[in-house]
Image (tube, rainbow, N blue to C red; front, side, top):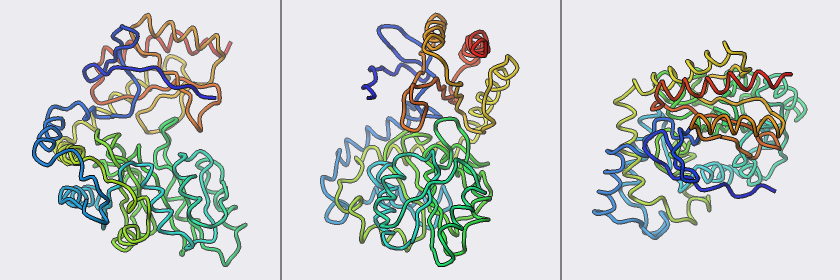
Length: 370
């Protein structure tokens, strides 16, 4: 059974205080550190003063504040989607889609390493759920074929996978997907990060939205909180009309909506942040590979290490702490059962911090082979 994690106190943009020690922090998924940006924090504080903390009602009743509609309009504009719909969390975005599409498909097909929110969403679709091999277009094609010629399938996958930064091959999936099929892409980690202008996995893959529903979270690249469904106006209206994940909940706190609006504005105005993010990540990956550390060929700003023995994990834990780096050893559903080291890079990490991490890993990890 997984235990509750120890508490951490964020300090500045790239450090935490852990057990009284100030350490460099390569974890969390605030890729641009917008959660601590002064303008974003100021927007939240100002909204708290002027419009309050919560509408304390469903948007289907008296809680449909203009701030939510403004944020939805800006999200649709930023991601070039026909429509956007806010949910209180990213997890609920997938559930809302599943509830709205109940009975529309004969089979749901899910990548074997998809986020748990997609598995939960699939329960609402009222159809058999089948798994296909991770990021495997031919495996998906075989599962589609097994469903029969009269089937109508929906494929569920992460956009960028959080365990290693790999990306779903959306072009290849669309090539084997029947004309009446759909893709539900949970792009929590790709939105704001991947693509030339940060539109996410769809932009990265060079595909349009014709047969794709994209769900995102506002707690990663955007640095705020909440979830969003980016889809057709028809599906947005259907979620509003039929989904209990939308109708039966209080929407996100108003200050967080204001913070997300400011974050979107900043992301659009500062494309150099994305360039810095990938300069940091790619530079670290190059240094690690040159030093003999095996890494997957994945574009995301995530550095996963191979599985290791408990003794190897303890040795690396000590080496990281000696270098004043927080040891990012995690146990998370979908990852190795005994846990693994994963380091998440941000645009704010300094060259000194990246070099220090590289030095520790190059000294430690290649020895795991022997």
